[in-house]
Length: 119
Image 1 (spheres, one colour):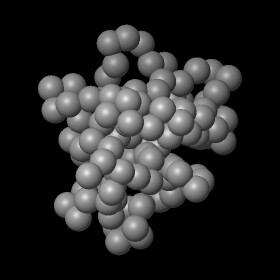
Image 2 (cartoon, rainbow, N blue to C red; image 1 turned 90 degrees about the horizontal axis):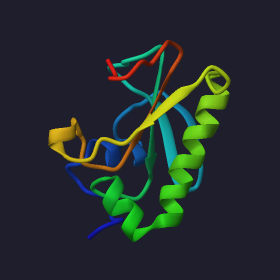
Image 3 (tube, one colour; image 1 turned 30 degrees about the vertical axis):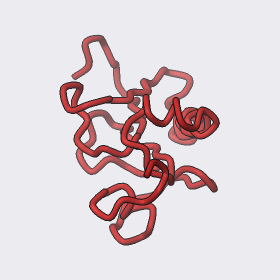
């Protein structure tokens, strides 16, 4: 069921403290942690503590929680001091878009020029 922890989900395991992560922020509804394979000097993932498959499912089911994730992404950018130079918030939705963990999450990228296309 949406919102319930999934036993086979890496991010649910991070939320539960079963898998270590370098947590940089945590609220009652979200956790933000450093990506283990950073694509920019600042690369932090912001996830809802509740399990939703992707950003579209999260937004449809819990728009307030989706807003929490976005709000925390902005707070992470400020904490990491990339907010005044610019940063990117990315939600990969589906395997074809590069989503590899099927628990909604925002990538916060910054600290270098982020020309389009990304990479």
